[in-house]
Image (cartoon, rainbow, N blue to C red):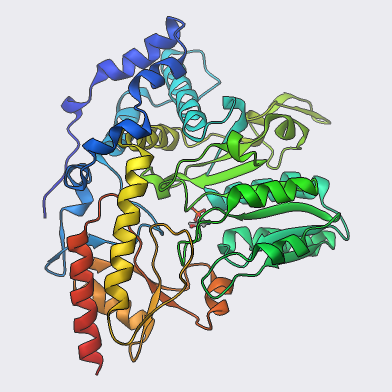
Length: 450
Ligand SMILES: *Cc1c(COP(=O)(O)O)cnc(C)c1O
């Protein structure tokens, strides 16, 4: 195994100070970011998975004597050195609490945090940084929306629409709210391909629909939801829309203004950023109407023992000391992805996914689950004669890390009559050679089982 050390001498303090002084000099960060980033379309010719692999220290090790193959990207992604370095650099040179103290490090930490917010805004094409709320991840983000928008606007007899494809993070919080408010929770059915049935969705919509909340990309079959159409249909009934972007953020460009969704949520760790940081996008005029959900520091304007005046968004929703280093790491990850280009990434990952589907479907006794019209990055299957969890353990012996279980999407799997599946999920650092090795390993596992 290659050892990996962060050499503090390598840390480029110029970058740190440049970002700080650009604020001092009045140059808005967004301009600097625009200079740094490339257009998606122009970068496809420089796309190279081999080069990308070199940026990810964790990939260069052996597991059980075999080179590691990381096919568990839908659960979490690995981190490039630029992200690890950005977090280390923050702690080595800039660490401070933010927004409060009037000293130099507080200024730098605050700048870094707010710069990261603007990087998120730019990445998902939100109109203003005030529309970006930092949270721990998708789960916390959806809970924030449920506890603020949901508690204020959803009442007895109202209807909440989700989808059968959804992750538990987009089911449980709405279910809890529905029980508390005596509202109804309805789930859009899916067909045998794992696609959303739009006609059934249309029938669920009505004057009582208050919110439609669903996953942009499903984590079990890789289904890409017809998100624009679905949002447009919800709008006709004046329903609010929440998009769970946990699975789409790393694989497909997102423009929240073009989508015209009310909320969009994602987790940093699914797009090569650290754990414990993610973001909620909310339309500004909507966020302004919402009450806070957690009380404490930073979310206030003025506090007496009797009363509190709350801060404006996004601070209103960010009580307490935030994960500043996580936000810095998220900013670095988004810059990294942007430099490579989501257009090129999506094309390459689509190629990998289709290659995997073709090779897997040729294996006797292997059953692919779902065959969605539009799909990205994820494939699910079961094997005759090999219990799913056992298959996962046997593949680990071959150095292959993938998910074998229910993937926090039990209703989606049960629609296919199974409780668990084997799920490789691909990223831009995976290769066709790795898929070939997976195929060989599966053949070995199934032979052993016979
Ligand atoms: C991973 C995932 C979540 C939950 O994300 P956390 O980072 O665990 O909060 C929600 N929805 C989908 C589609 C996911 O893939």
